[in-house]
Length: 205
Image (cartoon, rainbow, N blue to C red; front, top):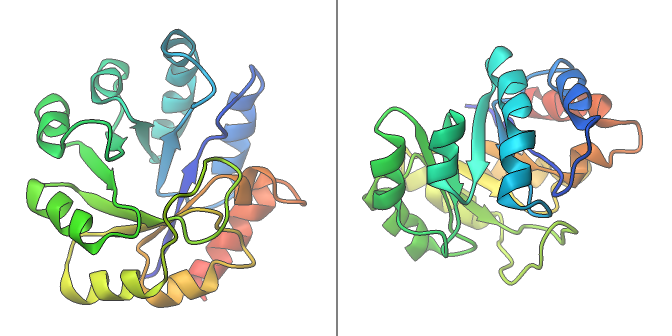
């Protein structure tokens, strides 16, 4: 299987972002949208997220909320992405049900990934692979963790952290099922639509 693009929202958005998101998703294949509004409080997220979810789902793109399974469920998301401090897979699964996605941040840890897989996660996310402006990086992952995972397990793996069109190729070659990208799309010099097209071309090459 080739890699697919897993788009992450910027940490802070304005009222014009929904239209920008629609144009970006229309530019090419995007498998999932993670709504990760770290610079907004929950009241803001409850106001801002419904439009983003609607835009994604109307295009067949899975809408996944970061961190909060209860809010993801309340907003009608297709899944939740939890970090190591956001509770257990079991607790998220109890809220989301068996048909929606639960993904887990596993940093650079093979052990955490195996624990998440055994607990019933739908995907594991490794990273950061490169320096990133969207969060402080305490864990540096190497592409060989992707190869190790894909050779041993069926469960999809996501590569995350500082991924751009210029540096994605080694991660695709290593076996990443999904490339989780934030700044590499939204801050692309030719605009997010051009970035989506470029990532799609890389994934298909």
